[in-house]
Structures are given as C-alpha cells and as structure tokens.
Image 1 (cartoon, rainbow, N blue to C red):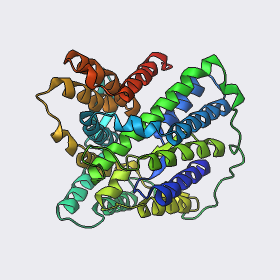
Image 2 (cartoon, rainbow, N blue to C red):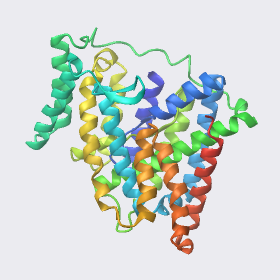
Image 3 (tube, helix red, strand yellow):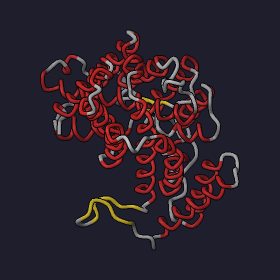
Length: 383
C-alpha cells in the first residue's frame, strides 16, 4: 500500500508540475494483476525479478521518450483509432462499474457474464446510487459524481450493507519489505524477454491510449488530433514506473479515472498535484478510505464510462477499413478486460485494412513500428 501511494504521489507531482496536465498517475491494475498472477503465479518468477522487469520497462520508456520517438509514434496513430481509444476506455470503465456494483456477474454458470442478483440489498443500493448520481448530473450539481459516491457509501454504512470504517487514522506500514528489493540481474534471461516485452508494450500503449482518450474528451487535441507536448506526460509516467519498481510496486501510468476530474472541469496540473497530495493523505487515513464500498464507486464508473464513449460518434461507419480496427479496439478492451490488448488489436488491424484499401503509401513508418511491436506482443505474450 505504501509503495503504491508513494509512487502515485511522485507521478502526480511530476505530471502536475512538469507536464501541467490534469491526469492522475497510479499503479495500473491490469499490469499489477499480470505481474502477480501470470509472472509470479503461473511462470513462477520471484516477485523481486518481476519488479526488475518493471524497472527495465520503465527505463526503456523513459529513453524512448527522451529520444523523441515516443511522441513521434503517438502522432502516427490514425485519427479513427484515437476516437476508438476514448470510446473503448469508456466502455471498459462502464463494464468495471457494472461488475463492481454487482449488477453484472462474471463466470456465472455456462455464460461468461450475466445479470446479478437484483434482489440483493447491495445491488439495489448500487442501482440507487447510479440513479442518484444521474439525477445530480442532470441537475448540473457541482461535484455530482463525488456526492453520489459519498451519499451511497453513507447509506451503505447506516443500513449495515457495508461495514462502517473500523477507524479513521492509522500509521503507514513499513516500506522496508519492498524498498529496493528488485532483482535487475535476474531479468537478463531469455525466459524474461516475453515478460519485459509485454510490460513495455502494455505500459506504452495503455498510457498512449489513455492520454489520447482523455485529451479528446478534455479538448486538448490539436486540429490534427495530437496532444501538444505529449512527451511531458509520457516522461511523467515513465519516471513513475521506475520509481514504483524501486519502492516495490508495478507499472505506473495515467489512470482512466482521471476522466472523473476532467468531467468536473479539471484542465490544469493543479488537478494532478491535489490528487497526489490526497494519495499521501491516504497513508494516514487508510481505514476510512478503504471502507468505501465498490457498490458506491461502481455507479460512478458507469456514468464516467458513458461520458467517455462520446467520440465514437465521430467514426465514419461507412468506411469499413477504418471502423473495423476501431471496433476491435473498443470491443477487445472490454471483452479481454485489458486496455493494452485492445490497443494492440487496433494497431495490427489498421495497416492490414489500409493495404486492402490500396493505401499502403499512406501508412506512416511509425505506424509500421507500432504494428511490429503489437504483433510481437501477441506472439510472445505468456499465455
């Protein structure tokens, strides 16, 4: 917990002061799960070696950013894919919200997803929270999403649906067990190549897609669909990843939940700085913050997801060469529960359909680099 909070606070501080963007940085849940369950649990690598792989991937991202190639590759992303990033992230957030709220259950019987138990008090309260937050949004009440979360959580505590906070203040746990425990030398084996490649690709594309998606919603993109000075937020996430590995946590990057702050009007780095300060505050208020139930935050994610899918309306559905790769991005992000997989699907398919359409000369060299990187991601992914 301490490693996650400290790395997030560091990343948010760099984002706010250096990049001056309203994007929060924290440990990616997907990469966290990949390291814990696949690299350590399935492949049986020591967690110290896994952290070494995270550090190396962050270092590679920083070097790629400083060389200027990361921004070049970001600028080469086709406009249709940029719109699909925002829509895909929105659908992904909504899916997370439905699952966290209990409205949708995963792995129920013979079907992969199904409707939850709508008679369960927690699910009923989550639906109430969704409606309440929606009403506040319709009425244009300031901080509608935050008020919806707090009101729903408060009702859950009073009604006994969720356990009330056991306390308010506590001392942070010691960072000693994870601080500087990474094993970098153990990374330089052929077996770890696929792990480093996967971590690098997921981090590279997750941040690229999230940045573009959030920027599209915030109105930061220029007339060509690019984010000015994109190398600054790129460097912030790369430095946060290397710092996180040193502290003892996995890949850090721009969080899609930054959309909640953007929807409330956040447009400057002050948003990230405040977010980082609140992360640090959470070190001492863990019992209170950790008591907020998923049934209270789930409805907020659903509504933020709704706000994020708006760019899908800009796709030209009459042009199948553009819309098929875009649809693959949107669908695969949600159905695989992994933003990086969806992004890779789009980068592999877009050049293929551009060739079919007879426009091979219009494919930028950097787009071919992304094609090869994503193709390697699928080939070497440690399934």
